[in-house]
Length: 426
Figure 1 (cartoon, rainbow, N blue to C red):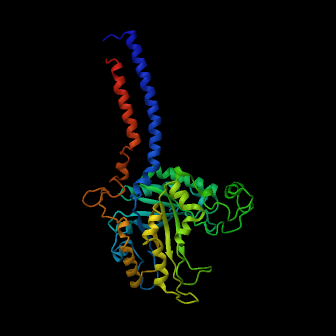
Figure 2: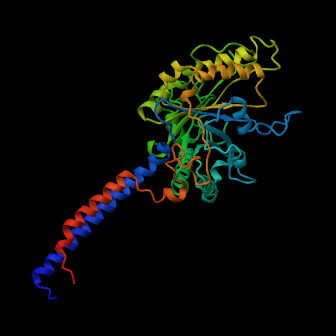
């Protein structure tokens, strides 16, 4: 078939138009893919409106006589008569000796979300890209088994008791390296930013001689030349909305005053007060729309208190959990709280305490997402997708097309359908 000059001109015009459309679409797809990736982990793990997870960080290495080899998620589920929607473990980076005991999670046979608290220690600023990849690739392998992870990296970074604490410039840079690696290796792992409560911040004297000039400039949020209680305890350490999936904060009751050795009733409204210091809840959970986890929570009972048992162990602990875990009014007032984690240290529940908690918990039990059996394919027993995963593992999630990307592809197809008739067929 002969090609005329007119045909050749039409062909070149159509080819140029297609090239332009493909370039534009490539940019759209790249932006859409980045957006989809940044929100994927958050949306995949966040419970539906009005629901949240109950989690626990157990003392799995209890060395007391008669304690066996410590507590286990499966044992706690049995005692509660409830399959916790989440379990928490600690993991150092670099992973020198061994990863956290995933087999304890697997023993539950359910799809509980793993909260992994990762401490960059003992030297956070010497962590290599390989160290980070070892961590994120481990998360990716766990994701591929249908298990979701909330990675709580470098918690309490605004405190002076951490090796990575109160060094916002280096911390944010390290955080963003971890974020990039997670997005590459572990699509169903969300990154959790969890500062310490601003109560008592900055916890020590900070001067231009105790921190770098760059850090001092960041920490002095009021720009008055000093770092004190008037400065924002959170914003200098925040890596940016696009680098954070969830937020977290620990809430503890140790007693009324330092040195925290008296066993007393917790002051009413204390949990709400902690998460509202410096407008933390409003700023990060509401305005920035980040799911909030109470990443560690407990009431201490001082066994060797010089003032004795005080009000007693049950009253001390019940006054605390009734403020938030089993308090429907509190949960209604703070709907962006999506996970509450109990912290257990060297303590199995006394029968009286366990029964009291179960009785109080029954009133709000329906609010909490209960874990369901997990099949090897990453689906729940019976073939339904595991809640929050859409049935995707890391392998097949890579083939899923996010909605913005699908729209871009559809637009390209439509344009090609119009332009293709202009191109001569040979």
